Length: 332
Image (cartoon, rainbow, N blue to C red; front, side):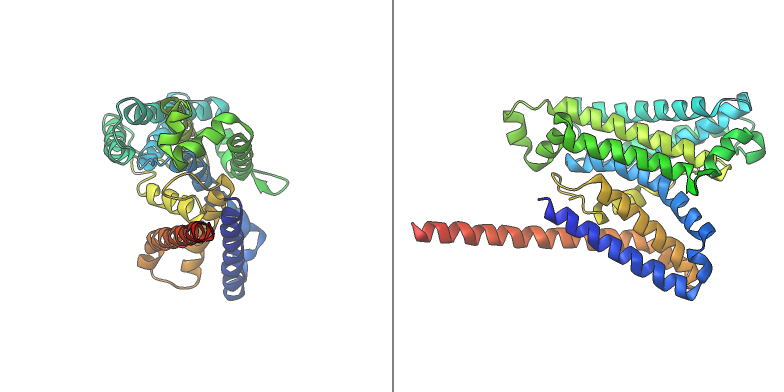
């Protein structure tokens, strides 16, 4: 179980190196200091969402509303500055995390308590949360918040760096470290894998499945909220369409990173590497002169390829297991 994710992660690193080297040869500025700085910045926000999505996919759940929640929390960030341009950055981040956690709690309650499939719930809340965002924007005089209306400190936080490492990348790395350690170092984290591997066995073992799944949705929502707030800090322009279509990119990053769509295996490290790879490919295609259509098709193609590869591996492992069991019976 450990070697499979590790093998996928090394494959991603190798693919990432190939993309960077080839694009760097064609367009040297792609691997310049500023080019890499921008690349990591763009990947950091998707990485935050991918970490939260990983917690859900491990438990055989999914959240398709992440793009809408991201847009809602980003718009909240802008509205806070319209109310008071000197709103502290930490308060804006906390507000985004809080609103994201509330949205995650709504999804989690419907899945864990009402027992509605996550695919159905989050497909519905995708449109509900986006509708709330558009209604909110329509009810105000300012439907788009621009950089000049925000705090300079907030914008400096979004584009700033420490020792050359973007602030947003440092946040993503900190979140990655905490969640990765929690998944393997704490009982609650290991129980998420048990739930995804065999829900019936997990239930018989006394694992509080409803509580664990609900908690995973809340944490994921909080990270999406953080992603929305950091998006506002980095881009500085916010409207009701922020985050549209992000759900595909996030799910693709998670699955490409080796998190089994069928649950029970995978790591947040792999998911973050998947986010970095897909972001790098998307950034490299315009440099290589690839038409915009193919740039949008990358996430879907990567998702299909990763799911097909996972399915092939599962079928092969099942065949080996059956052959081993047959040989044991024959030996007896």
